[in-house]
Image (tube, rainbow, N blue to C red; front, side, top):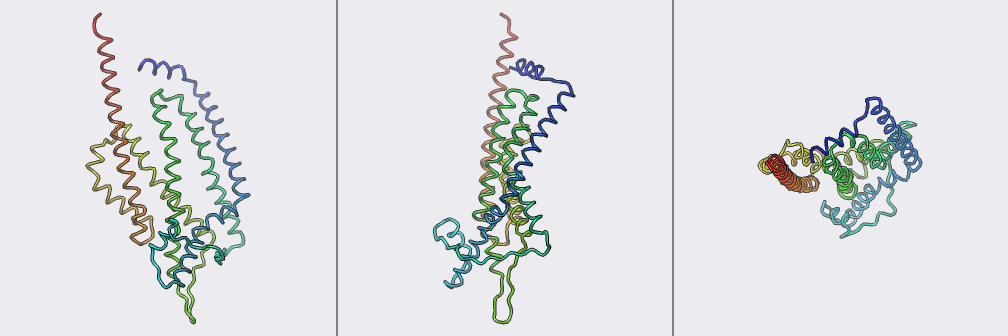
Length: 299
């Protein structure tokens, strides 16, 4: 098996110039796809921005419903976003502002750039894989593909948690700080650029946090960590997860738990993934030892 892999690598070797030509071709494809994705997202940037405002509408509708009902709390929002007690978001008079003439235009450009990277990620990842695949052994390519597929799925899971649960909590908490009285009114009037910054930062933070199984599994494949090491460091991992959740989420315990609990669950999943990787490596080592012992024994 080792000789077959070595011969495969030898067959795929190419001069440096050919590697540079291949890299240029892959980069051209990536740039072309990003330009097309940017144009598409910019054309529909208004609709995309309105879609990102849905959590703001839900938070405003729930706050108005709580004021008329005479009770309020984060659990009401949890019931609303999960569909147990839905709220009517129609008729919400949301108001966002921009204070510079071209601020909303540049905000839409930033939104188009972020959206282009998100929707073009499968193509970008495929181009990266096709460029590095000739330098990998067959078993390394087979091991690399699951992580290539798992990374965007986990990122989308983190983004969904932000969009459907975390953002409504953040905005509900912000709207609840308003002061409305006959003499003084302190209202939340977010800028369009600040709102987009909040959304993108939360999406990136949660999406990257959800890459924990991918990172630890790759580290396990590289021999940097093993399952007993991760299990022994569980208490330190819990402290780090809670600290990270306290930084990323708004200052209320429920929001912190909504991030800390899924990340801890992913940490436990990572331990099992690393354990399976270690068992498979042990089986491969045993098979290789038997093969070498059989090949070196006298006939």
